[in-house]
Image (cartoon, rainbow, N blue to C red):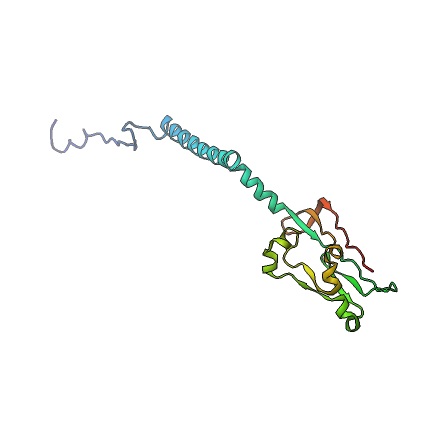
Length: 191
């Protein structure tokens, strides 16, 4: 080969394209190597999802079922009306006025003249509620008991028995349907 003016005429220009390859060979990324990588990645993700599903349903399923049921159902206490106290002529000395939310307000009709006989009611204190006497009889926080007079003496019969209602609620707390009901039993009247 001569170098000179004709040298450039004898040269051929060739462009060489190199492709990046993790394995070193050309075209690995565009062929079966890419398929193998995505297959391994897909199977790994599916395995992780399967493990999570197994954990949610088999291992911790009972716990999540309990949480779901407690979130979906509510127990409503239906307070029983107290028994009415009558005087010897048959006139009522007290009456129960219904309030919103299954409660009753005790109204003393002749409070000034019969207070020493009828007595009064008051809410249970936390100390009383912690005692075995009241807890075994089914009293709850917020319940009222007779303190003195006929309200105290006839507490067991005047009180009655509270009822319960199990309802299903939606996400906002609206009642959808009643699942079960244990009706309340009104207290007995006393003459």
